Image 1 (cartoon, rainbow, N blue to C red):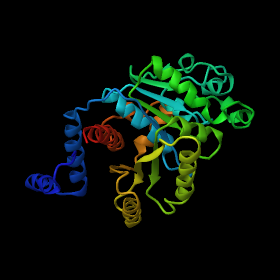
Image 2 (image 1 turned 45 degrees about the horizontal axis):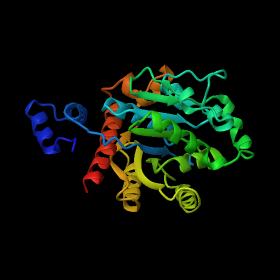
Image 3 (image 1 turned 180 degrees about the vertical axis):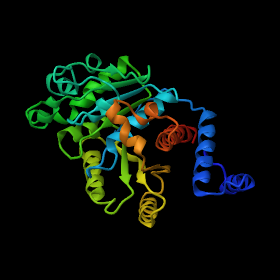
Image 4 (image 1 turned 90 degrees about the horizontal axis):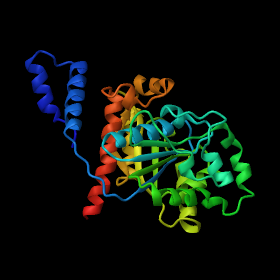
Length: 307
């Protein structure tokens, strides 16, 4: 959908004496940028609640959550990111204050504070919002044990918020563990979005995560389903990355996005500036890939709606 045919690019490059790997890569990026400029996506008005989860750390979970959110906002969607990770990295990347005195998702889960009272607008976009995390969230797992309806605290707060503040997407960034915070996310969401790193042991722990999803479906949230898998940290120069991609696509042909996120210095640098890569360097390879993935996610919803 977004890629110019390789043969066309190759012949164009050859005619100018530029048939080198770097030239081909630059030509490909240019073509993909142009394709994204002409993309138009319409949103149905229905809210999609996606929880970004992977119990294996270091797979680009938070990076994926914030960059997909920013890219969707760039397409015109209204997006709310709920930072449910005590580390607060999603809040940092979205440029939202989250020091110890900030009203946060902790207050919502433990004290019953309204979600509307803690949501902040990200400086990246007028239609990108964040419910921040603070260090207090680290103790929430223990405190939630004594709470009434402890698995449903986030869902209740989110339903109340959406009744007065409709959005197109809610993206929940989970901690890399299956505790009460992640269970709250699974109970509040309808879709599970899993980033998978294109490296050895990529599928490690995935069966446990799928088992957790089935448990939540059975006991707490029948609507929950695995809708999206995104391959991250892809290095096409290695045979291993290609094998991992093939294996994941073989297991989950309907859920894996066509787009793959390459290893990128820009993607890694962006959070240290309090930005997503979309705003830090929107023309970089990583930003373009995340923007393409966002178009895929939005388009898949539209296509399923038509069917």
